[in-house]
Structure formats: C-alpha cells, structure tokens
Image (cartoon, rainbow, N blue to C red):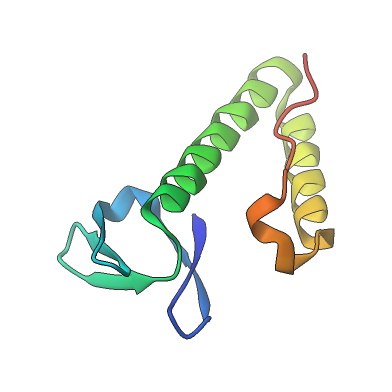
Length: 103
C-alpha cells in the first residue's frame, strides 16, 4: 500500500496493484481497474516513485526472509515502521527509509 492525499489533504492508503492508469489533467487523476477515479495531490512522477519504493521494500523483505529467516525480516519491518513514524511528517517528500543494511 502507498499513502496518497486527496486535494483536501486527507490521506489514505491505496493498493497500487489496482491502478490502471494515472493522468495529470492538471490534477493527478488515478483510474482504478474497476473504473473508480481518484483525484490526488501527488504528481504522477511521485506516484511512480512511491510504487517503485513499495515494491523494492517487498523484495528487500523477501531477501531477509530467505537469507535470515522470518524473525529477522519481521524485526527489519518493525525498524522501518519505527523510523517512518519518528520522521517529521512535514518532510515526507525528502524522507529516506533504508530498506537494507547489506547482507
């Protein structure tokens, strides 16, 4: 899931696997596979970066599970969540969340 914001600032989680397309018209309009249209604050480029990051974090978690076992992967996810929660929410655009410490 990725976090996106409605034009009124309300944030919500969106499953990017349900996105059919995203258009800048000039607001960003996301069309889901069921035809639902959502208008969000984020740019199309920002959406693509968030989706890329989310998918990379899934792959990184899978690597931790394969190489270090489930407990290590769960601890890593908890560490990422703690880091994300402690970061200044007003600086979301520039926040860096590490996805791997190396193997």
